[in-house]
Image (spheres, rainbow, N blue to C red):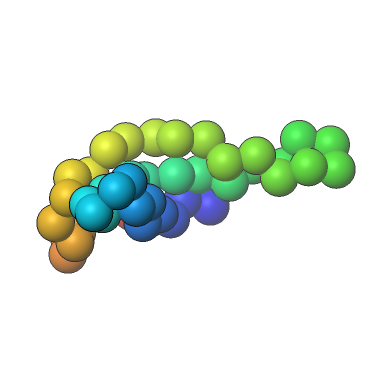
Length: 46
């Protein structure tokens, strides 16, 4: 399942596309793509 994660670094906010996968008993988030600093409205393929 892919989703958009909002990450704060200092005074800026960054958006990135992340996928969650289960590995055994743990859930691991895999970074897919950087989306930029403005809030994404239409993301193709999501």
